[in-house]
Amino acid sequence: MSEHPINVQREGAVATVTLHRPEVRNAFDAATIAALHTAFVELGDEAGVRCVVLAAQGPAFCAGADLRYMQQLAGFTEAQNRDDALQLARMLRAVAECPKPVIARVQGDAFAGGFGLVAACDLAVAVQTARFCLSEVKLGLIPATIMPHVLRAIGERAAQRYTLSAEVFDAATAQAIGLIHEVAEDAAALDVQVQRWSAALQNASPQALAAAKRLLAEVAHRPLGEALLADTAERIAQARASADGREGIAAFLSKRKPNWVNA
Image (cartoon, rainbow, N blue to C red; front, side, top):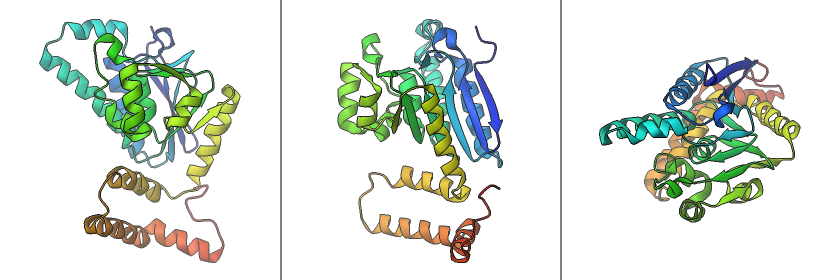
């Protein structure tokens, strides 16, 4: 088994978190969940990091829960299972709420919890041979902890179909329902798309990206009433008055690059 369940590397302003358990198709266990949680919390606080790439080694992106881990869970009490599930839920939240944009580089299959991990990322590109499945009901389980992220990614109607049927589907279908944004022909094309997004994200204001992520998460599905109008007006007012907002406008008017580009 891999000594370290994940690897974290930095190249310039881009950090790459790589699942490093190819012998078990990068399946989750308690150590992997804890390591991912720590990595995303720390990278979110790291000033030099502008975006995070979530990748994996081997033929699969993530197969969900490790079989040995599932055997251990079968012997847990209900309270122990609840605590364990909370660790997975908190890890997924750390990915989703990371103030740095997170790109999923999906080089292989993403099943169950791996599906949820892709859904928790901001941007996702998958190689065309990747397959996806919400397989939990086949095991007598439900995709409970990942469902908030799944619903945000693919919507209620698609979630109904794929949660209940547990169908395996391809990357083209994953793109059509919104789980991934782009399909790549091969690994080289996968890296080209990741690099394209990484470059674009580094041209944007770090403050604005973090604020935009919060905006997307907190405004979705709210009724278009006075409270929402006031909330969004407050957010843009704060952005205009922020250091990055003032710098961005000044740079635009002066026809120069803002100070966060190539910072």
